[in-house]
Amino acid sequence: MIANRLAKYSNKPWVADYRDPASHINSNNGNWLNKVHKKVDDVTFTNADQLTFATEATQNTYKTQYGQHDKFNVLENGFDENNFILADELAKTHKTIFNQEKYSLYYAGGLYADGRDPIPLFEAISNLKRKGVLDESNFELIFQGSGDGLEFADTLKKLNVDNLVSFIKPTSFLLALVNMTRADSLLIIQDSRFNLQIP
Image 1 (cartoon, helix red, strand yellow):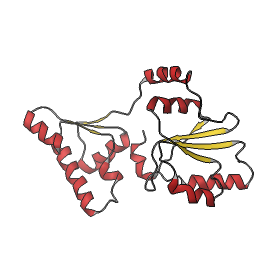
Image 2 (cartoon, rainbow, N blue to C red; image 1 turned 180 degrees about the horizontal axis):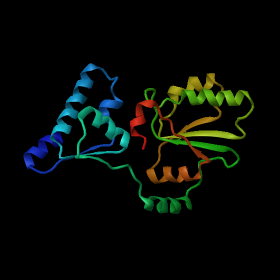
Image 3 (cartoon, rainbow, N blue to C red; image 1 turned 45 degrees about the vertical axis):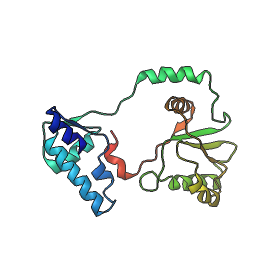
Image 4 (cartoon, helix red, strand yellow; image 1 turned 90 degrees about the horizontal axis):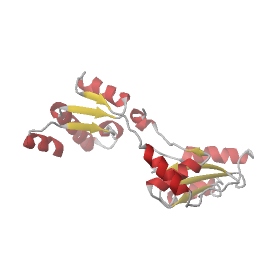
């Protein structure tokens, strides 16, 4: 809404960027908020000169809703190769967070019940532990940037995997990237709520 006003005031072109299709990923937030999101979308799609979307799926969703537009463009999320060069340099001076004797699974980012719920994963790990596939001598799952994990403590204990899963304090983007390059596997927790954002 601010961009709409600025574009009118300045008489300059407005490019609206839809990294996150808020009205579609938050559609269960209640009637009032749904109306707000719909109004924002209506104003944006009517008045913006160009619109960019992170994925084809998001673009197609809005094409279905608002019709075919020549002002729709897909501009996918990217990365900066230089960050990997910087991460290689950082790796030379920073000790690994992983136990080299174990298979290390790493997750960097936020968790929440509505969209990124790790409990089904904890249940799967518990099942593998019961079958003797995983134990604390050969496996670790490390969450970073996901809080302290206290909301999952009872579940982890009940499933008997609290010795396999740890939550560590957040770090900088570059050090998280170092950790990503050192882990045996990287974990993505993705609920269907976010399917439109998968390229």
